[in-house]
Length: 455
Image 1 (cartoon, rainbow, N blue to C red):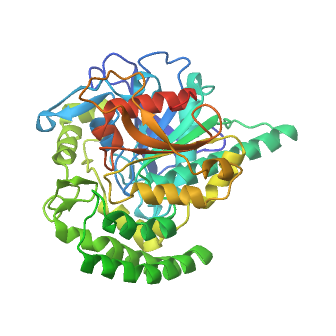
Image 2 (image 1 turned 120 degrees about the vertical axis):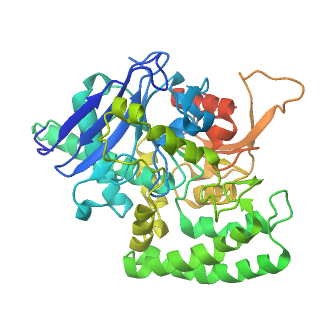
């Protein structure tokens, strides 16, 4: 492609891995001479020629999307200590074609030949993802007309708005070029929806929600009154620093907010022995920072020589589920204090639908904070979305028994069908909803993509 003169493609069609029932591709789309982005793509189990195309991203920042693929919503789950996988009947590729992408470079099996090409902020990461998508469509034009969605989790709440905004801006430029009679090899990306699960999107609102979530009398009460008073007393300073970052975004204004707010608001949980991603569980983060033994299993599986060979990964690379150097680079750029919610009004006003969903047992990106930033955002849907009533999310088509509750969450929405601007809180689920409630998450995902009413 003329727009990406240094690109190259190295593809494999894995045989017998994860979900042998569908067509799959893996390998590298080299967006420049030195940046090599790894992906693993699975066609839909249903109607790949017409089902939507979805890009899935995990967060971190610095964590591989293999977490989502092998532990949450992919066609298979890692089992047996990482020796093998087994089919996931609730995989989101039941009715969608899905790309699992390791980004930015240096995450998972993505790599760079030049350390100076590393990425430390979400806008730059979005540029690379856009370049990747252009190369993907160029290689696989059969998917170019399918509705496209960006789906992400955790720090994906920052990634996804930036990526969607980049796509939207580039699409607008392509439209203007077309009106002017210019020609281009770039593809218009048919962006239809954005989905974010337990994301970090508006830190100013979300950090302030922590004492309300963890200290109010409820089943989520975590701290004693003394600790709660200490956290509450630090919210004002945190918000002052965050506001300065919002108004004057730079490393010099945002890093102080990063360091102060994370340590003062989130730090106290480390002494409780609880899993910050699911308060129903225990976790010793000093020995297991990510709290789930399956995270280690994923690394074992992805590093198997036969798996690496089938995926087209250079033998010199070692897979790590999360790259903490990338994580630190994003922190020290101040990226995790930026307000990504400000990018959303332009998207939803142009017809791109937004779904925010959150497991209620997650401490890290709690459901209250996610609902509050949506309520605070000024859009054409604000009045309808802010109405005082919420609806129960029911199991609907899922099999029920007398022992299973009829209601599995709460929903707030504006717009027809599944909504243009929709929020769902899910019961008995933590940070990784598709892992904790696989059947419910799969039904939610399918209905959202079809724009069918969720209640």
